Image 1 (cartoon, chains in turn green, orange, blue, red):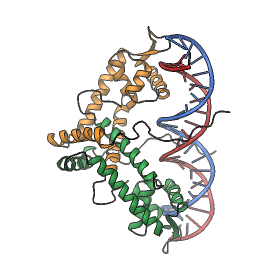
Image 2 (cartoon, chains in turn blue, yellow, orange, cyan; image 1 turned 180 degrees about the vertical axis):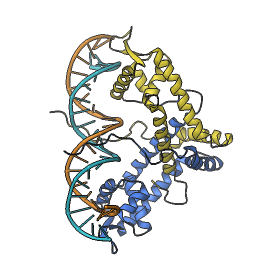
Image 3 (cartoon, chains in turn purple, red, yellow, brown; image 1 turned 90 degrees about the vertical axis):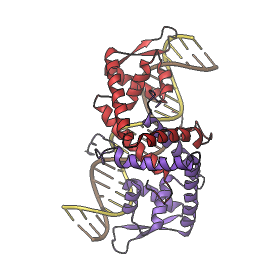
Image 4 (cartoon, chains in turn cyan, blue, red, orange; image 1 turned 135 degrees about the horizontal axis):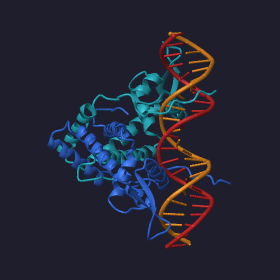
Length: 159
Length: 159
DNA sequence: TATTGTTATACTCTATAACTATA
DNA sequence: TATAGTTATAGAGTATAACAATA
């Protein structure tokens, strides 16, 4: 959506920047066979023993999408599901040696893409930008419908 | 996606801020029966005689999505399709009196939501933020795969 | 009874293809 | 031949429901 008037069109700025960054990030990570989600899960799984549900919460991913993501990581040989020793329902996502190597590379890619985008700013502007964005996230959107993302019609039962 | 380390996670900041703003904007505009796209088309159509294709380009909307959006505007009595006097294939989107009234209100809503988000920042920080974001959009994402958004498998012909 | 992980499927969004009528 | 607008539908992503195993 294009700007409508002289006032700063925050919607346009955020949408466009978010879209461009997401596209570039996806392309950069695709070069080593990862999606952004796979990278996210891989990194969090490396930090400690985490179940799928815990990883889903950390990455704000639906648990059914997490199944797909973990399937992809297993197929790529980067992680394995192993039974939790304390809860026989749960699976710990264990990163393989190859997965740990890939995670280091993918983190470098993520950092590089972020640096490229932020690199066109002066150090001061960069600091202000990051601080201002954090401030907006904290206080700029009230405390209104925090946990009600997209309203959807209730689905009909399968008969 | 959550931050992975001490470095500023630009992806997280943009995604989260964009999502929150989009959600709030959608809720605010829904109160007067508009979507963000309807608002966008309405405002651009008010600026002058525009065909659907022209409006689609201005709002970066697919022409097939534009059909749906214009249908919605017509159903709501905010705009009408009228034949172009110079090209019998094309339709000018003419905003009705009611549509013009609604557009004024929706623009106020958009401005208000933006003000609420930016209002938590000092005037200086706000200026730096807007300038920095514009700078990133201009120079921060290279000139690489500009017009290649999401790669998709080629669709099979309908036989 | 509630929760973890899974499968199946429905919903929404958007893009592709094919078409009509004009240019 | 190419373009404006339309329709139909495929593809991708994601959310909902229902289920089995276990708590």
